[in-house]
Structures are given as structure tokens and as C-alpha cells.
Length: 100
Image (cartoon, rainbow, N blue to C red; front, side, top):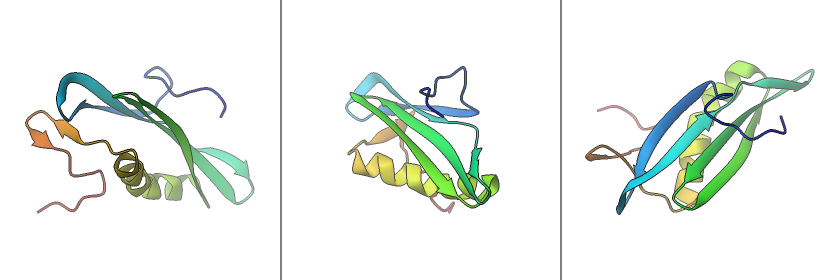
């Protein structure tokens, strides 16, 4: 997949507020998994906002596995990009965070 993910071609999307910038949105977009070879699939994702435009892919054995691992990978990308995200009045704990 060579085109950047947008709201129009993403299969999933969530919008957050950037810490310290309540009017600045950070969008996390996930694309449709696609087959690269017989035993390799990829799933693109994009994090855009707060001065960032990060475009990556997760690779795995099949489309289900790409979706299983993408949550932790996105969480790691958010941390690595030094983004602190909020959902309304609550600090975002991550996609892979365990529920209490």
C-alpha cells in the first residue's frame, strides 16, 4: 500500500486530544490488511496530529495476526513519538491496556 491512510480509506479511526493542546486532535487510523506473499500480510496504520505524521505497517503471518498485534505496536509508536493523548477528561491508557 503506497497511499497514505485517510478517513476515507481507513477501516478504523479514533481521534484524541493532544496533552496541553486541547484544541489539537491526534488521529489514529488503521488500514485494511493486505497480502504481501504466501505467508506474509501487512496492515498499515497512521498517527497524525500534534506535529506528527507517522506512517507504518505491521507484518504478520495472516490478516488476523496483523490485527492482533497492531494494538501494541500503535501503543509503542505513541510512546516512542512522545505523545500524551487524552479522551475527553481521561488520559489514554493505550489500546492494549488491560481493563480493571
